[in-house]
Image (tube, rainbow, N blue to C red):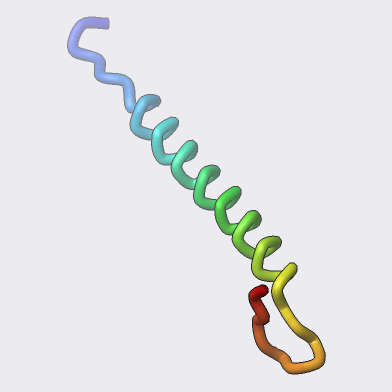
Length: 46
């Protein structure tokens, strides 16, 4: 259709950004969990 502008590109870009942030959060929490010291209730880094 003449004059039609698809909004799909904007929606797709937002979805990809949100998915990337979710993946980043998951990796961050997994990484932090490896350094959590239950005995001292703090993070310990080698």
